[in-house]
Length: 275
Image (cartoon, rainbow, N blue to C red; front, side, top):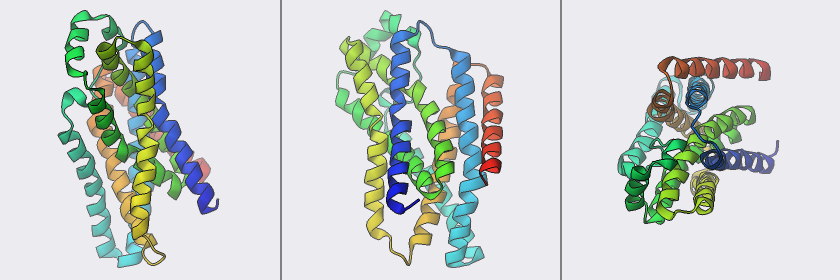
C-alpha cells in the first residue's frame, strides 16, 4: 500500500475499534441480562491477542528497528525503555482519572433496573462533560496503539483493532448505564456512549499529527521503533490491568484463561498464515 492508503486504512480500523462502544450501548438497552460467560471469554480472548502480538510481533519489530539505528546493545536498551514508557503513560492516565469517571469501571445491564444504583449515579454523572473528557483521555493511547500498529503492519492492525473492539463492547455498557441514570434518557445515553468511541480515532489522528513534525527520513526508523515498543507496553498494560480483571469479574476465572489461550492461539495461527 502507498502511505496515503496506509493512513486511511489505519484510520478506518481505529474508527471501527472505537465505535464498537455503540454495540455495548445497544446491548445495554436491548438485553435483559448481561451474558457474563460470553463477556468473560471475549475479554480474555482480547487480552490473549494483544499480549501475544505485543511480545511476538511488535516488540521484536521495534527492537530490530532500534538495533539497526543504534547497535545491538543500545538498541535493546531503548526498546525496553520505550516498552515500559508506554506502560507508564497508560498507568498515569489511569491514576489521574477518578474511578467514578473512569469508563472502565464495571457495569452490568441488570443494573439498569437497580433504583439505588440509579440514585447513586445520578449524583455522580450530572456533569456529562467530565465523563466525555475522561473517555477521551483514556481512549487516546488505545486509539494511537491501534493506528500505529495498523500503519506499521496492516495484518497485525486488523487483529489489534478486533481485540480493542471486543474490549470496547463492555465499555459501551459501562458508559451508557450511568449516563442513562444521569439523564433518564435511553436515546441520549446511547448516542453519548456511541459518540464517545470517536475519541479513539480522533486521538489517533491528533497523536499522529503531533508526532509527525518530529519525523524525518533520517530518524523514521528510530521513530517507528520507539512508538511501536511503547504501543506494545500500552497493550500489555491494558490486558493485565483492565481486560483480565474485568474478565474475571464478569465470569469464572477459568473462562477468562480459556479465552486468553484461545486469543493467543488464533493470533499465532493468523501470523503463521499471513507470513
